[in-house]
Image (cartoon, each protein chain N blue to C red):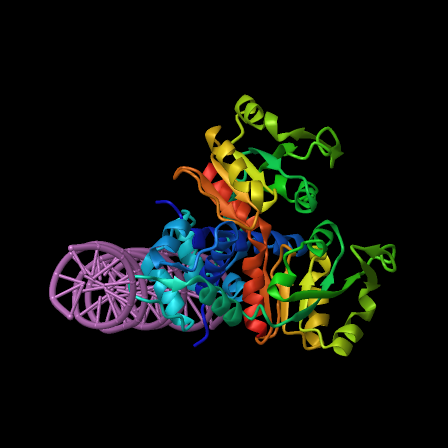
Length: 204
Length: 204
DNA sequence: GATGATGTGTGAAATATATCACGATTGATT
DNA sequence: AATCAATCGTGATATATTTCACACATCATC
């Protein structure tokens, strides 16, 4: 069965926790209780999640850390490379370009685009900025399946339409708006204001 | 009763949708069905959420857009100003400093800090970068309640400990790690890799 | 190898969240 | 003003998610 978003998120947390922990102190095995304790999750939940991706622990011992990490990477598809384009090289787009963690998850930014003629042709973080007019062509030629959208709100839907018409499979949306897409395109919204709202509410 | 995170997130979506919609075309009222349609949510859900923050619609008409926006802003605490400090002026920290949307939600970044002596004293986006050694002092003097954490992973827990010892109330965590804090401190994690995982899984 | 302590795996129960169904209310229409 | 259609408010129902409870498995110890 398709794994739910909540499960994916927890799997990520397990993976990050185990990676970090083993970097500091190599360990062979870990129990669901230890993970649960560190991440403030119910131990049963951890076991169920592991069960859901086919992991088996051993009584009285726990889980092989190595196995867990591998299984998560595999089920998440991190060992599978995803070629992506980034659209909108502003402050945020620029920051994403230099983010060092992407390749760890198989994400490869192949090319970057911007509508601003003043930016087109310039270089940024090792990329030559291309015109968004060549976007469609590029995506088709290189069979790109993922677009990272960092444009201003005003043009985000226009570009989204153009993207979906190329047959793109997923859009990682960093613009603070909701995008309309066909049902088979995944949109993952990264709205910073959501986090802010939770904080503002808590501080009130 | 305390509103749940899921509700807060939907309230934000309503708010954003209504702000954007009214900017394009001023309207007086809107129905739960219209909102639901646009945001791909169940209409009942919308009504329940509105009910939860004390909004009353009128039969056959819907809700006063103005009222809805006000109520959401108020319940979220956006009209209440929150003074914050930002720690770690790297790529991401820099991008956040120039993000124009914060004040709309009442967030005011008052000062920025970095541990790197090479950065201390320099200016960035209108701020003079301060040494993290003066962090505690500053937070206490100015009664800061929110810290935005954009440091490398290695120092994030150390700084978190220092922050919580000053009595800070919330940490907006942009570092890709889990932070340990006392129960009364809110941590909002903004892990970019969570989004990436959802995408990678979908594309697999 | 028997025994006890500690962990897993999982069905059952509890909780949380979303949807349905429908009476009540309002505005438009005749 | 009587009727109709659209919309809200909300209890009941359905679904999803988390937690509990406990049988079964494994290792350490005697």
